[in-house]
Image (cartoon, rainbow, N blue to C red; front, side, top):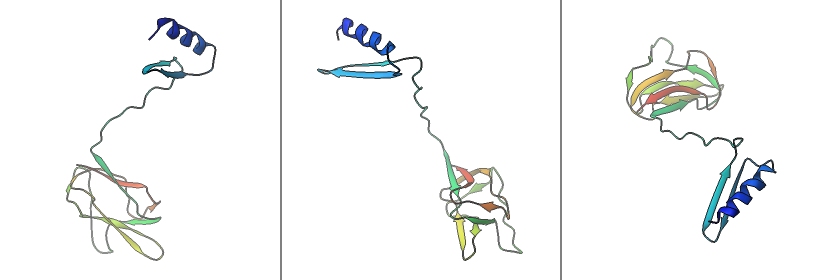
Length: 124
């Protein structure tokens, strides 16, 4: 690519309010970013699986008279019961979608929950 063209493009970019610019011609490509350009988002892998509330309602860990204690660090298996969300008309069962260790427990007995609220995080 012609260095004169690169100089012209960068000089022109300084006169605009653009933070980044990409130019392609005849198979050549130049990408210029100023200090105001947003950084690239970080890409990382996560071994945690969120278990979310299936409905708006009240979280219940177990039936009255029964005890289901879920503790962080506890090993659980896929489809193990994690409680349910009680709505006006129905109980929505919550089960573990994967096997692993229960790393974060945000669910509290009798607490109101919203649809999609993370209740547990399981490390695979």
